[in-house]
Length: 259
Ligand code: 6PG
Image (cartoon, rainbow, N blue to C red; front, side, top):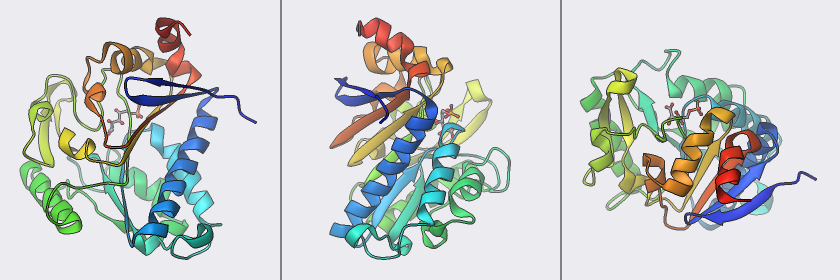
């Protein structure tokens, strides 16, 4: 039995895992739980995946577990992957086979050689000019969700050392966008432009799960959950806000929280 430390903070439920491996396993469980629960009630489930390096291990774990999950519509733990729609919270402006592509990372870790082959993947066409890529991706969202705001069942997010999430970086224009679902965001600190969901989409999700691992995130985590002065602090979804963090990432938070 893994000993975890769980507490409420900043409208979130924070769970501290002893090490990254336990965090990854719990995240994979939550991902599959939401799919099974959603498909037991509705005909589709919509999830937005996080990019970066932390999720890669989680996606590999999900892919492994998916191989043993019977096909079906959500009853008794079965999953019909054709009903699972996978989106991306953000994407780098590179072709899909580029080493920096979040799609490539997801294809390699989650989609290839796994039971998720039948899942409906909504790729950002990031090989296009940024504004056109953002426009087409937003159109895909509108097609999928119909009128009104996109309502994801789950959005997975990471946390950058500067407190960014998705590609909502400090001091960038996307932070202030309220009338678009997706924008091409110029990120000078990355010397690049990125395609990203805006806060209205993130905050209209039923559940957001942040995945934070490693000592290099400890300062950003305090800014996100205590000072609340970084972009990640502005993510406040409709129902559940979960932070899965490992002990290395949460050491400073526990000190500041006086735990
Ligand atoms: C990306 C992500 C980005 C990421 C954070 C944390 O495209 O890189 O959307 O927001 O989640 O930078 O990245 P790591 O998990 O690799 O530390």
